[in-house]
Length: 301
Image 1 (tube, helix red, strand yellow):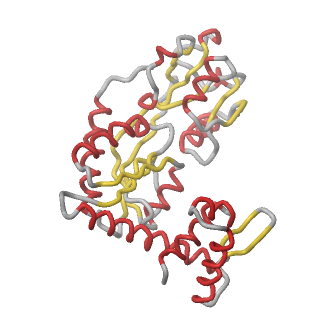
Image 2 (cartoon, helix red, strand yellow):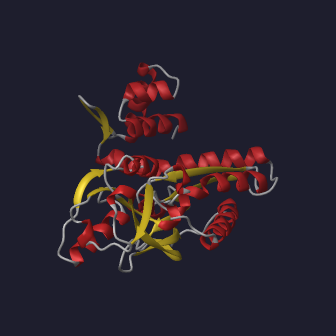
Image 3 (cartoon, rainbow, N blue to C red):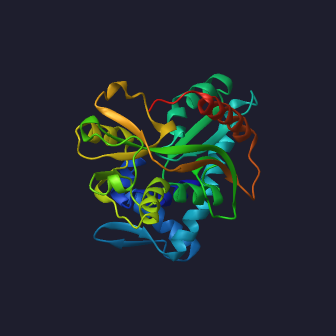
């Protein structure tokens, strides 16, 4: 099966558009359509369905797309290893990082250390919700991840690494009590992530334990945007202590602990079925050292 045709098919699925995929691959739209048509002819089934909004995979297309992830990744790793000519661990390693976690602050140090120690490793860092990352680990699309637990997939090995504590961030003029109760937050507008995220689930569960309901003012998926909104007194938010940047840049924001334990756990996750490759093991060692160093450092809240 032609690798270029598979790449064309995957790119069309990823972008949901033949025209955008053609631009991304530096092909004409006609050439890309011919490659996909040829691929469909070779497998004997329709792989893409068309609509006014673009293209999407058929049931058969979804099966092929899943396998293509393994095939194309294997081809990339093979080419990288060949080009490296055996000079130390080499290949492509994918790391998933949960948003709103200390893992985000490790992105730059991880890139720096991997480049310094293992220049032939190509590091791919992917940030997404824990559920999507755990599925990607289970299906072999990424090698490892630092996610909020629990992760319920049997195909994912979960190694708890850090227990963090959630705290409330608010503008100083709100004068929240220290510590603050959920009852004191019922009339305060809350800026939180969506229900796909473990932090939102923990917030909702905290209110439910007291038969209370939060006043959701907005759902925001960016820590800098959250902090900017809080500094403008558009509402308060809840974040893990370890994910907080230095608050010197936000002098109007104060961090207040809850009056009850609000732990949230980070875990190191890998496939339970497939061993890590040599380059992935090397990256794992670097990432674990960085996490251990960050976990013992003082937090600013």
